[in-house]
Image 1: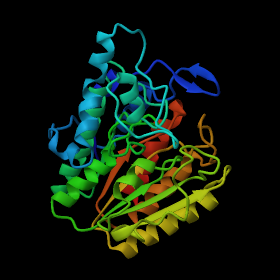
Image 2: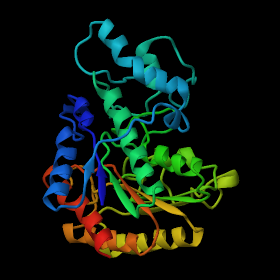
Image 3: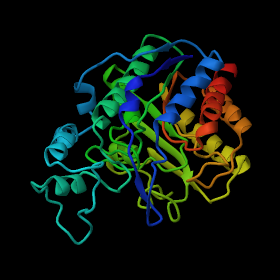
Length: 342
């Protein structure tokens, strides 16, 4: 299996995030991608290549232009203010406030963020840009006839909406790649999100559409981030009614429950008649993950890959979460090896 990877991910390294009333080192760190890449090479999974740069146009097919302009220029504005540290939001247009876009940098950051988990650093824009190009290069490989590819994206993307960052995510890599498949002539694309946290950004992007089926297995949002999307009664709207499947599970779920949910998601994808499957590959479902509550073990990720392979569809794996850094490479590559060996 081909892996697409860019060293640019190291340009994004937030100093801290707010967790449980404390500023703590970010769980989303460069060593995550480094461990996955090391495991890819140890297991001789296949060739590792740098991405092609496809420019801004495919990113603008998903993301609002004003949002992109803000994100690209935010660090220079912050730097010009002479402020130390990362740029992080501290106010948001909540339910009783107006959704206006102020002129102030902090006001704009609050408008374009939904949480405090996406700090902007000097290299964040370039890292996110390159991650999107990694996903687009994976699309290019499959469009050329390959059965599978692995887009080793960092920062992750599935929490990013069309004009919203948060949850460590800035550009929605899997959505950008999905749209590229559609623009290349595919009529039906399926996204399978196996990250512990619901892919709220991906859902919101495709919620009113029937050309992308979004399926997600995740921690119940009544108790888990992102809290405000990911409920089972969210099935799509308008033309997208029936093309959104959320499978929330309780804390402590192990393979028996998780695997049954995967079967349900795969059955829906098969019934949909997807021409290609994109997997938002988060491995924070692991039992030792520091910010998640599922109980999958490393051999379970082999089973996960095998089940996805039984769909018999060209498949692009796009890296998302996973914060047990020592095991992230083993678990992510187990999915890929399970898929390849099926």
